[in-house]
Image (cartoon, rainbow, N blue to C red; front, side, top):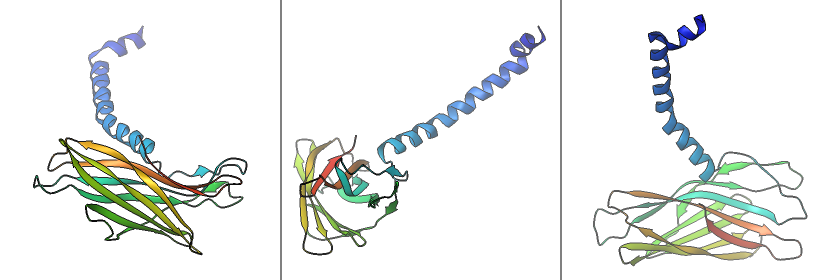
Length: 196
């Protein structure tokens, strides 16, 4: 009886109300954390694939930023943010993640080019191009890997994606993943994909 009275008295109702406000205030932060963990997965260690499967020799993950221009006839600005790399090692149970910095390449006229150097592995060259479309922009391009040592080069197409309704002060974030994979008995393949 005494327990039931404590739950329904004024003090209990105020306490539950304040607790509900606390949960409501914490919800946006929890949602953003979950979404970043889903989209990025930058900092967690991933298990290495077994030798019988397709094996990743290198993997990059990052965000492409598309910033609207203050002038309608000027194309949006392209930038890279939070690019990480992982290079699996034979026999290791975990794959280390590390940040890499992007430098402008100057190869692209209608877009942007970035060089992503991964120490002792090679340099990923990401060339992005923007094409105007009716009320939107089409973003595509190419990815090339020059692997050290030697003259090994790999090329992949960046699938085109349509960016609609980009306002002048708006910034869009497009998560991507690039990987060089090795299948037993075949040459390594470079791939680029947009992440959901």
